[in-house]
Image 1 (cartoon, one colour):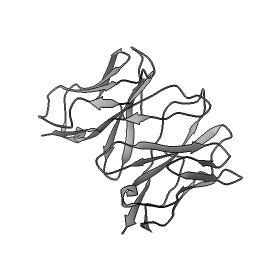
Image 2 (spheres, helix red, strand yellow; image 1 turned 30 degrees about the vertical axis):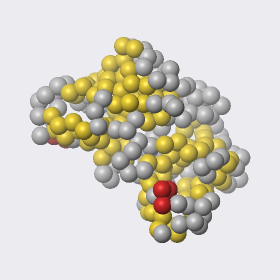
Image 3 (cartoon, chains in turn red, yellow; image 1 turned 180 degrees about the horizontal axis):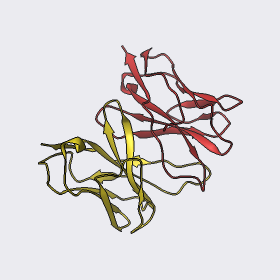
Image 4 (cartoon, one colour; image 1 turned 90 degrees about the horizontal axis):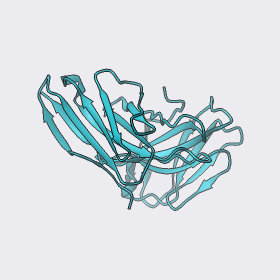
Length: 112
Length: 115
């Protein structure tokens, strides 16, 4: 079973920030938080991952709470092409399982 | 540009047929995975392989087998297709996790219909 809880759906206006929450209250010390997204009719695509520090790349920012029990993926300026299902995944680091367990994700709809 | 390719985008088979789904990656990845995706159930792992000729069962291996004779190719086999195996099948590959980084690269998927 997925170790994460996400809202089933969210809406966002084009050009605004999209903030997608994820709860992972049972995360253990060596587990990372990963985010993937799946645009309709495509395979999932990696976005970002983090352990305890906030992370940023060209696609998004990841904010992890100090207790690591939750995180937020931020798309700073959402576009229509960001409409997708976003998956938050928790898994072990090096030496841990190579598997990713996908939950049901959050369907983000970006509206014009 | 990294690439995972799957042999067919759409496939229609009849009940009882033996079905082969092929996946090829060009990134020299050790790990390869087969998932199926169904509405309301998300992605579920069928089998994965972390080396040539090595395989491990995922969460839903029943009715499937796999073959990995070469590093770049991972095949999913439905020995006797049934209608409940109608689904989207996704292949992925990755390198072993290092310092937490474990990006899986996915193919475009094969939509299999079993009549």
